[in-house]
Length: 270
Length: 264
Image (cartoon, rainbow over all chains, first blue to last red; front, side, top):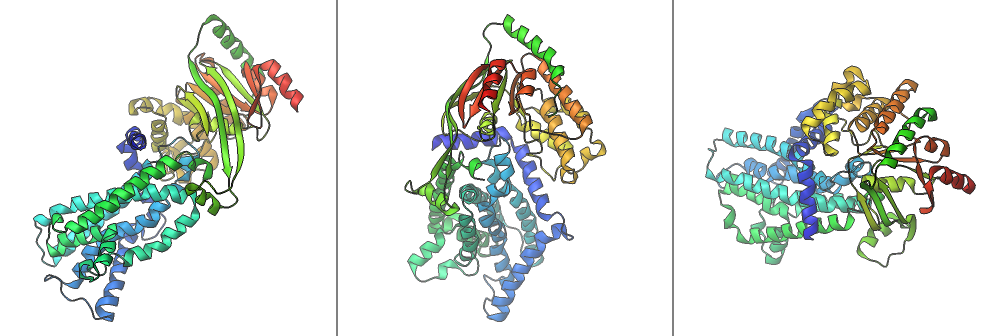
């Protein structure tokens, strides 16, 4: 186990952050290349999602009024912001080794860095969306405050979680297309069984609440909302932190297990 | 690669003389009881189940079977064998792309393999950026690469395209740039697959000349893979004959070729 951690560290060190950054950048360019709107798509898709849910919930179901003195739209935006990152990496992470199979099968390459640069690539989009979110909040008259300082922390936790996830799922996804498809179909479930659309704390059954809090999407999404809407500090939701940490440790262990178990087998399978 | 055997006769002679003078040379590649098995499952589903349970049945294809050999610095070793003899698997293990099921592999020095020439390029970056990227993966520092940059560009001879994203390259251009990088990085170990073909006649000539130039350095180790014996004779002095992953014969090139031809 420790050997594998050392190996992963060594692989990152030998490739170097400059090269990891460059790989992340070209991953990003590849994503939007060839589309007439190019970079605008990074914006259009999230806006579309927000609009659809706003329409469905606020106008269709006539639900969701002001939350903590802020318009429903802002409540929605704060929770969805990290989801735009996570929704790309749940299936994207599972497919990452397969996507870059030429680096695995054609040359000697530190394979454990593939999830890392993929997440950095997505983080760049996230940063751009974050900037727009901050501007939107400012337009609605929300002044920046100390709570916003927690954003880098939540962001860091999100990147750690999903990099581990990508390594774990990417290795398994490379072994089996069935696993890849399973994750793709689970993606919707993960979304609805998280705290993005509703507040998990309002669920009465405490066991169910606990299960939903094990979903890291819940923690990150409510975290962003705590920052933007509820103005709470991260330590105020102790159960949430514990649940999140349980999942995080499980994911990291899973990632290390998968890398140790499959690294040598992957080039023969892909 | 089209190789004119006469070109290399002289170099081989010089290298042999050099070797005779020296005593013990550094070990650069060694295989100790290396076995490589591929697990063949009936379906992809069975393979996935096999990750978690040992009960799932699978067949084993032994591509390399208990192979041991040593290569010392300055050696030129030919791997002779028909299709399916395990040559490519051996090379993949030497380059570190794939890993043995059991046994030890030791490799010391930078390897340049003229195998998958257009592999590992990033289509979105320019050819120039890719030079830095690929050389970096070979473990070179930025300054070292900068010193080689022009040489590589001149050799690849792709003109203005060097600053264009590589996705706009033709497959020939990619292979040429790949070859240019592989041969200009001053490898300690050069791996050449005879089946390789790059570019037109003019470029092939240039390639042969370059391989010759590298070979002239007596410290460079060569691994040459082929299923035809004549070219192996041109610049290898030792050969291993392989069949179904097993070593049938190891020794002097002339004897090895005689043996190999007997197996045909």
